Image (cartoon, rainbow, N blue to C red; front, top):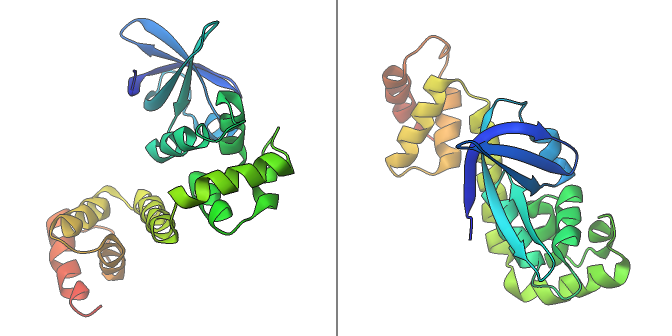
Length: 203
């Protein structure tokens, strides 16, 4: 099983990407959502993959986020949801969206996915509800929100947040403390970390 590929983007369409890894071009089917987020040709990426093996074909499916891959594998456990249908669902909904739709019995949201009717959506909810929990769904949603916020910080701030998390502080508290430091634009990581540590004690 190919767990992931690290390589250079050689070509991208709305449905697939070709990744060059050590001189070999790997074609993987991708969601339209990942296609819109894919960097340009010549850029290096990590693609988390799932290899579908059937009697008549071997197909590789790729995801920019590991969480999307895990959700994809979960979708494939639902009877009637095949590799292409699973990819269609992840084109219309994020992994977070799917978790909350399943847990809240939101048939309408899941039915927005191409090729997924009401009956399949209901079956999906029925078969996945026991495999998911609101606690896990909220935790993953919070993690994704923190990652997105951290990605908008400059390098020094990102390093300071990572250092605080390594010291045992919660990601949300670390992010809040670093952002609360005034005039932090020209500070190095060490100075920013010291001031953030003072701030975090008052949060």
